Length: 269
Image 1 (cartoon, rainbow, N blue to C red):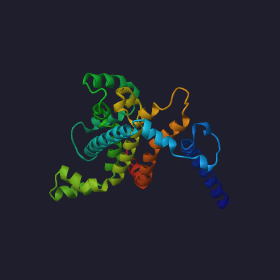
Image 2 (tube, rainbow, N blue to C red):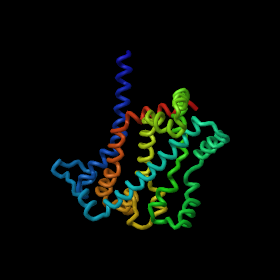
Image 3 (cartoon, rainbow, N blue to C red):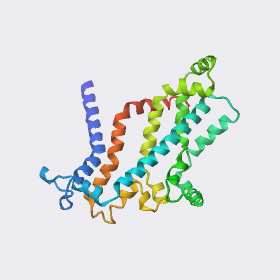
Image 4 (cartoon, one colour):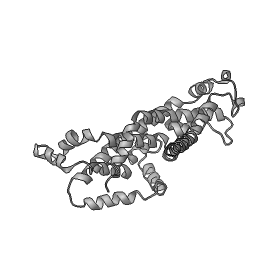
């Protein structure tokens, strides 16, 4: 009976794995086909990298990659810095108004970003940041969700460890960088994956704040490959693969830390 239950469990896992992998497999397969063979089963001799060559030859995809990487790195550094410092301060320091600040952070998590988009656009346009990297990065260097996650992680660190560092003569800043930060690797990697994935796949903000094709990010630029009726589906699928592969590689390399970071950031409230 036990083996039968285990067999059913594995069958269900395999079914879900196929469901999740199928869209990527579909995109990869059709990205290797000529247009007249899309959605057809063909011999391996029909498969080629011509669609990828066309992307690099006829489109400014390298510039789109550069803009996306710049946006992802700048927001990653900014959000890691603000989230870790703010999360540590709320979790371990005693100061007036700490509870109020934490409650404000929790409340902001409930506000849909779409409600903030128009006033944010007006502010960005007023500052003259439209069509610049500033508009894609500076407004997003603080993320309340990541501050919350960092705080949840830091409260799991024993206070005795921090107090021991203070007794040894370290101030709050030094004890944070020399004692706490080295053991915060799981939450740092978790926030890195979340932030990088969010920035890499962002469409709403770049499509709203940028109209100059020189400032297109990868998602916005590749979105121009399709026309209204997806007449170049093979080229579109090649773009989908090029967007997806970097994120998959990042996840595969860091997945064990991601699970640990999520677990430790949700233990205590």
